[in-house]
Image (cartoon, rainbow, N blue to C red; front, side, top):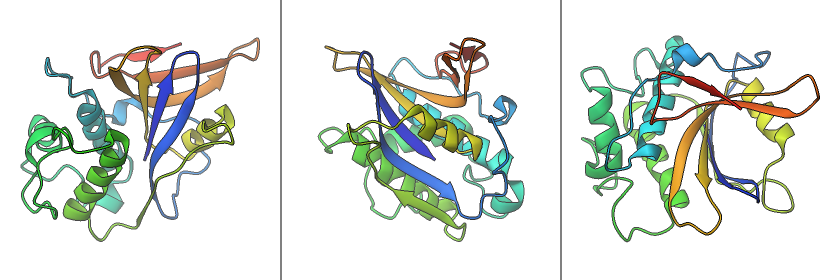
Amino acid sequence: METLRYSRRTALYVVVTLALLGNPFLNARANDFSLYGQLSNTRAGLCAATEVINSFIYLDNLAPGVFDSTPLIPRGMTNATARNDFAWFGWPGEPSGDSGYYKPGAGNPDVRLLQWKELWVQTFAPTVPVTFASMIGNVSGFPTLDFLRSENAKLEDVELIIQFVGKSSAHCVDLVSMGTDSNGNPTIQYQDPNNPKTLISQ
């Protein structure tokens, strides 16, 4: 799993990675959009929590043999409940005894997002072989397009956090594919939690 932050007219930097060890899908070139959850954002602006849950659904669907006995979205928990627990309330068995990701005054949101993903996986899929890391991309602090393509080729789920220059608000989407057009320009496809049933291409 990747969580990236993007600032228009600057670039991207990586703050979170979570990957299945021994990923059996290394020859893939793009994620299957049909495997993602279709949970929608709310008026409260829970885009990051929504896309984390949509990406957990993607991983459950991508590797059912891995998550069959310990799915990332537990059986009996609705997707909306999962989003709200991740966002606001915490969840049964959450090790820190804390509230959700959006807890006011809880510090750096990127660091906290990594922590809460770790806690979620530790709670619901503790025996699944995954790796966690916090990282910065290239020397300038941003990952390259080649890095994103390499993660996409391994069927990693990748969250992009989009922040516009001069504004404090941000928006989170799930990266589905990276490519190039006939002129060699980079292309991107992603899921937006404000319109989660539509694969958006740019």
